[in-house]
Picture 1 (tube, helix red, strand yellow):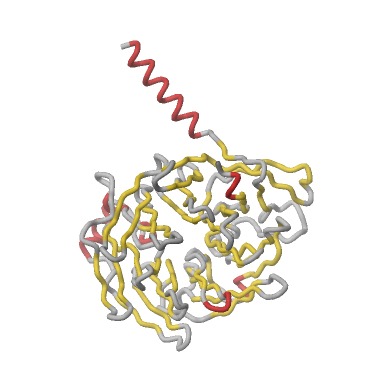
Picture 2 (picture 1 turned 45 degrees about the vertical axis):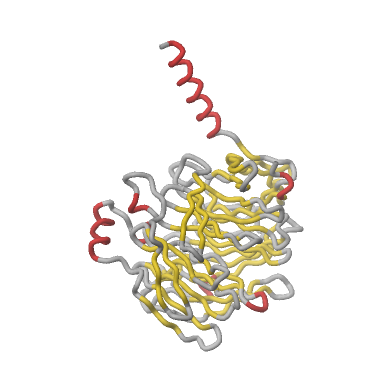
Length: 397
């Protein structure tokens, strides 16, 4: 009995200790995005949750989400200078919007596409936006209109040729396509939950954003992939405009089937697709040809797998965990070390007014992206006071 108690104590100590490990390589740094201690370019509180992220050359491009009654921003930060560069207030472009959470889809001529979620008082719906970065590094935002009246845009992706956008709306879960050239929109209700499914979600007290697909991708064979209620993976064929559901459901933990929801995607250099399941935080390998799902496992013992990004060396980096816990950075390398949990990132932030530097911890990380050369990983917080955290891939050993 004494040996058993000792073993249990040792296990508990190890688990608690792991929760308080921090990833702090000396080469890493944080970029001040939203501290109200300076007159420099910064984002105000409650409007700075970084919910979309991509990197174009030296510029980090971000989109934010805001609190009720407030508007989001599009911003750029200079990777080499380690500082904020330009800010565009979306309230000046499309009034009444609250969030840009679809991520950015890269099209032709370095144009990035995203979708917006409107505020509660905005009944018209969410807009598709096109973002380009001018020679001075300033975002130029163009409004492409509302694809589905009365609905926000919850997830968005682009085809391999950069001609067509595909998205899913909130709150109904309507699937749509948008031709960039003709601006023509087609809608499909194949993914809208049935009445019995809505009853199930009501019993579990789930809101639409907890079961509607959070992320879409386009496979190498042109199929659009994502999740559908309840706990299913689908493939949409643009050529036939047909939906096909995988024979096996998304892997789940017993009693948590209703929480199955894809919230992140990444494609390796050889075309392999990886997805993150929000419900139980598993990393999945998805075969778009055979319509199969391989459960690789959980990087940490918490739900949600919020973002994925490949580095130049073939390692897959991701963000796992969320409230009521906090985010962990992890990596995955097939056939070698498998999962590696780096813990919670804590990077040095140096900026005007804090020249001595402070250690900034990214407790709630919502986005992750790799630089175009794959040598840097950038993470964005999605709290009321959010910053960018950056590290060179070679520093993560």
